[in-house]
Length: 327
Image 1 (cartoon, rainbow, N blue to C red):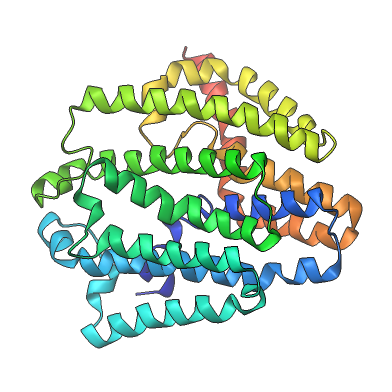
Image 2: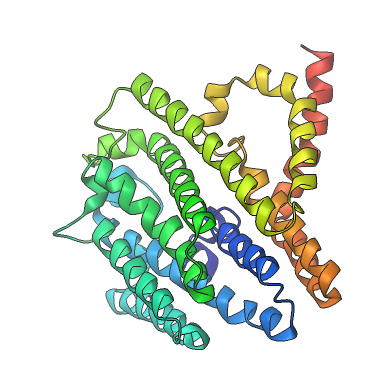
């Protein structure tokens, strides 16, 4: 068993962490902070977010061991001895707290850090176990995995304006959509293990209607956020938005063939995922590189880190060709 399987790396490394760094890049542009020290701080910040997320996922696996055994779901943590499990959790927690040392002087960041850990605990642990408390579970998961870690970044910059509010609310809705997809995928296992998630308690058609509604609100928030961000960074965000819009128009026949329902309730064609997690952070890193060439190192890392999205976007060309041959 590898460390990456233990922390379930493949499930979150390029779909949760990217938004946190997007916020960091954006705020550097807002404040024109393009010094070497701002680049160097990305290292402890990255270690922190990886450790924080690892802790949350392993904690969930720790309290799901018996359930996963019944449902037949893989749980790498359960392969370790009890002592090793506690050691793994303690290591992730301690690593995150040490990596956060450069940021403890920002009191709001520390507050959001505390609530990030608290939300992870109450989501998985008894007697709270919000995971099995319907809509409270969805809210708790999104706060723990998306919104509160994002707010830590804004806390570091001590910025709490309209852009902060829209960024946080958008990340919260993205989190709701993704946790719903997760529960849809785990539906049969959760039924088998008698785990009462939000999706288990609802009719399948009702879930799709809820997700469509959430996505509509998400789109409205995204447009609002882009407008606000454009004002703060001199409209430099607009070129990538325009290019992505053209990209989506080109592939619209493919999206139509796949069906919006198919895209919305799965991860492989999740709407806007490549924009949120790859296109937008990559563009922000390029803008930073234009201000300080050292930041082009981050651009290279962005491409290597998000290689799955690069392959996905190029793979769409092949799928489009197949569609034209067999409409």
